[in-house]
Image (cartoon, rainbow, N blue to C red):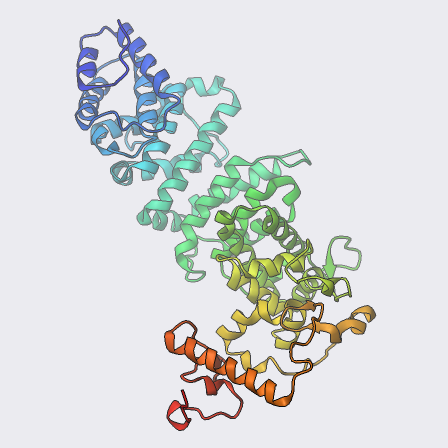
Length: 539
């Protein structure tokens, strides 16, 4: 048969008259053609309807297992493109996919071949991601089956599929286990009813935790490697509990165990890698924060502890979080910066609840300044301080980064200016009504220390820019008082004209410490009248 480059309704009609062998070869040929494609806009709606009708007839007929696998493969490939995908689907076809997946309620999973199940798993993952109809059918018919099977993996008996599963390599079962977790992740992201069902099912929540613990604890390698099932289970846990808002957890959610598990993963970052740590940090942001999390993340230690510590508290978790955050700040694509916010959230919580954690993080991020530190701009360089100050200017993480630095400075305005320069912290001060405190003198405390070399140059540091700038020639030098006054009035008039034209909108500091727009240029002068009506307008 001559090859056809476009799949049309006419082509599908010809499939109906083919023998099983011919149809198997024809579907295989089209699948090879589709395998490198991710868009199928050339397949019309009529063609999709014809494919849907023909496939529905096939699944109701006693066709060979080879043809069924080819059918599943074609649906999987076409489901890469959400465009007009709904015309390809119907309830019977979705039921067939659920049957082959082994999670349709009332269907005997022992009759399914492993290869068909694996193909059905892949097909279902694409469909659930791309199709609202598929998710609707799944919610109605397959949620209980999925939860039941995910619990079977960790119940001690293993997954019971069919006779072939007893002969299959363990990696095959693990692959199906991973696919089931991926399906759970996608569906819990979209279906709120499934989130509630999972959250209230204590045995299911326990199965997810055991899934993570088993994969991590069974690893004998000391080198970094992937933990795919643990990563998917972590993402499912986050989907399930994120709507609790950090409180009102049902008794089925063991928050203490989840915090302990997340902290354990963060503590072995060199083994589990950054991806699993990111999922653990995400999960921590959704769990109850406060003294419980602080006591687990920064426990009391004995005098013989050799890891990172401060004032008899274990600092391994804050230490790892800071180091990963520093790496991410240097490497992460700007479009992914939102992921870094979770690190700031947890660090803020730990440093707020635990003074030892705050002092330890301050030593890492804001150590005593030296003359070399103030010889260049605060946002230039590769130190943690430099990276954090650059994060203040990120459109995504600026608020949390500024808040974290401010917390490390014990919420002291003068100390924040010292480490960042007023220009970098002005936004934070304006938002918090702290602009009126920028002239306050810094009060020393037991945590405040300066190197001797910094003290020798501190008077040369420009508090606005935060570093020592070369002083240029004084433009007013050599002028008489009358000439200086003349230049000053020229400036006042220029500002007034720009204000009138809307080019600039100057502000002064209001009584609440926040910027207040001025209505006249003279309000920018100290002791000037407050309203425009009280001033003489000579222009």
